[in-house]
Amino acid sequence: MQMQSEARADLFASLADPMRRRIVELLRGHEKPVNDIVAELDIHQSGVSRHLRILNDAGFVSVRADGPRRLYALRAEPFRELDAWISGYRSLWEARLDRLGAELERRNAGKKAGATGATGASRGRNKEKGT
Image (cartoon, rainbow, N blue to C red; front, side, top):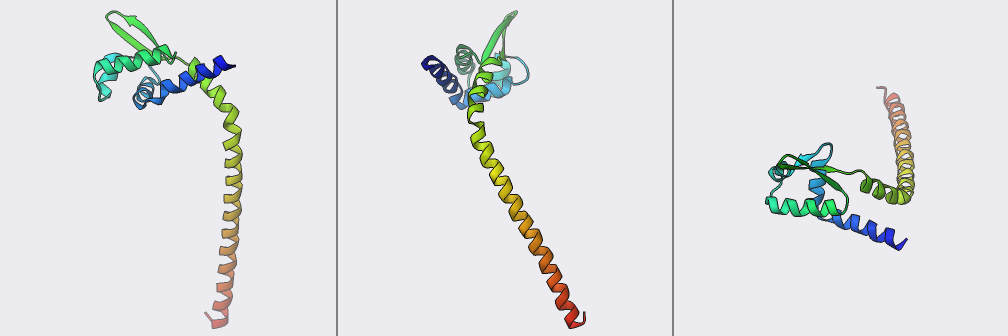
């Protein structure tokens, strides 16, 4: 159990850096060579390579050679591990969102009832005035 929590902490630590999260977003959907990633970020190629090495060591990305280029792609497994861990906490916020939704519906129903009552009351006043 201790080993799993340490591994999970490493996954979170790997994604803690905003530039690494940006790289993950860039790799979403398809693999890219380093130069394409560098072109979209405001850091040098050596910085991108360092971040990719950290993501690779953590298991988030895979790398394959394509001639002289190295192509990077996301791996699904660490994201599944994070999702499995988070799913244990999902019920906490889903229950809160359910209660919020119920409260909003209750308030909305109260506003509609109040608006209908106000409209009916103003019609009654208008009839008394002869309009």
